[in-house]
Image (cartoon, rainbow, N blue to C red; front, top):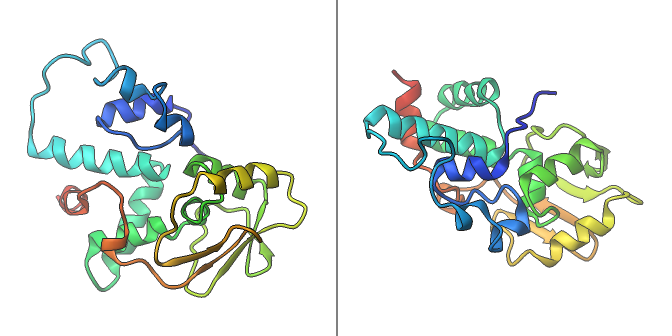
Amino acid sequence: MARSTDPKCKKCRREGMKLFLKGERCLTEKCGIERRAYPPGQHGRGRTKQSEYLAQLREKQKTKRYYGVLEKQFRTYYEKASARTGITGENLLRQLECRLDNVVYRLGFSASRAQGRQFVRHGHFWVNGRRVNIPSFQVRPDDIVSMRPGAAAEEAIRDATDLTASVANWLQADHDNLTGKVLRLPDREEIDTPVQEQLIVELYSK
């Protein structure tokens, strides 16, 4: 299984904003953005020539890093989104939101998407009573996501729920029993991803 092993703080610094890739650490003064609020690299403090293409590319890269998806998989998501009825950009974000690792994070069962991905890969969660260890698994309305009984990560999962302030409106969570339900697919206004998806569509449409 391919995954990005690049330093997470550098990804946030490259995009110039917090992507919350390290969970609770991103809320402290140790956050890379707080310590060095400029892009990484030798020329990080230099001037960058702005262009339409650069803006589109940055939005794509930001979205990939936000959800922890690599280029080939992200392209596949875009092709599926463009083939469906409706607005392509919204379809794209809806697919990314419905990934199981993201849903685990949105339910408050992990401190970050990366941790949620690890929990899923290690088989700590069930979907409708069946073990699912594929982070990209697409959940559907009425699906029940629950922690596997006796999972070794239960303490870490409960610690993550303590940090959760709220759960998305399209999800329902029971933190006491560590179960959650997908009520429906999310609407665009319910997705707080800080991206302009239309720029991504323009980039791939060239």
